[in-house]
Image 1 (tube, helix red, strand yellow):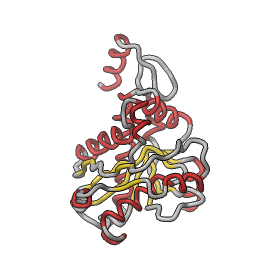
Image 2 (cartoon, helix red, strand yellow):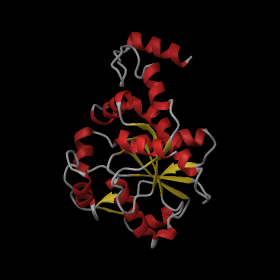
Image 3 (cartoon, helix red, strand yellow):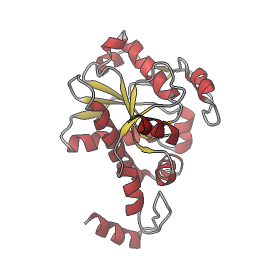
Image 4 (cartoon, one colour):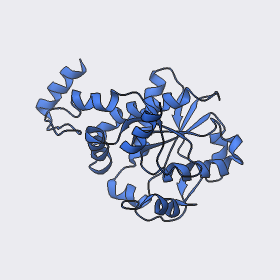
Length: 242
């Protein structure tokens, strides 16, 4: 039924696959399979930044997966958020299965810089997180988005920066405003982002959440994170360790 509806809508609306550009489908079956066909797994960047929580990714950041993420983030193809959210939900489930803390899942998105949100016209990570929370609830897992992280100082564009410079650029850049710690205490915290490359953003997010909760042991869930995709090297390193 879903495929039939896509065919009919494709005759009316000028759509193209966000992964390969094939006409008459927002996401063709082949690219859908590349985004959702794998098994989410633990990923680790090299070098691994201090404070990085356990991160689970649904796919490697290459080929159609890379194209779909860029289409959603940079070209504003917002209809892809549902497919990306489903992928993120799979990574969240994979990580949550290794945590022993109960309560609803609290998806805490890593925030984009305000100027980036203004330029794009949307916050891609938060949009994907909302779609993932909906997917989790439909599967019977209580979940909601708790967007408590804020950038409290300007940071440089991360593009082109190596691992060390990214960590220095983001060090101390995020915070949880007063009162946010009460929201974080209401369930199992899962940091979420669209992509893991060096891990600097998630490590800084984990630091800010830990600071808000008082100490590492107070972070509900013990520190875990999920992303749609991770760099191929981070994905392959963990595959080879299994």
